[in-house]
Length: 190
Image (cartoon, one colour):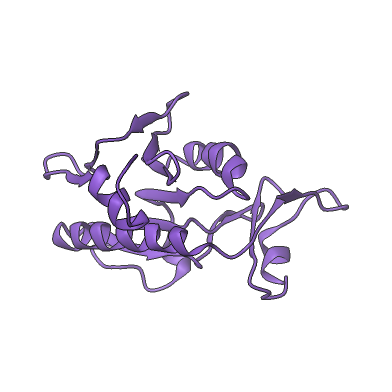
């Protein structure tokens, strides 16, 4: 759900001042986005991707994989909490604080009924506009991943294999999506 602020827009500072009530607060272009705590299968989906991505990112010394809650502040009117994201190394080392995070290699959101519109439109446009090389939207119900790149008007719809190659010349990460969704959902496709 999005809410307008009566003075014309929310800021990252205002969002940080909100109570820690278990809800997720983000701001995109001054609009406050509020979502409830994630469901069990949402967390399982993030955990599965985290384990896979973390192994690959460590093996290839690309940076660090982080999961929510963790704020990414692009500027004072844009603060988001991707479900999962990859930050690159800073001068050859993992960042030590949020101030060192200037860009993302990947952002991932898992759809839920309360976040689908913002994940697919509001946050997608933000990530694309900020040059995030890949943005994945995980649709558990459809058992697919929408992969967006900055210049795309339509996503790549991935239902079999997801290949991620953040650095040319290195072998890509390949994720078998049937296995991933079966592990996450605990059942096979109908």
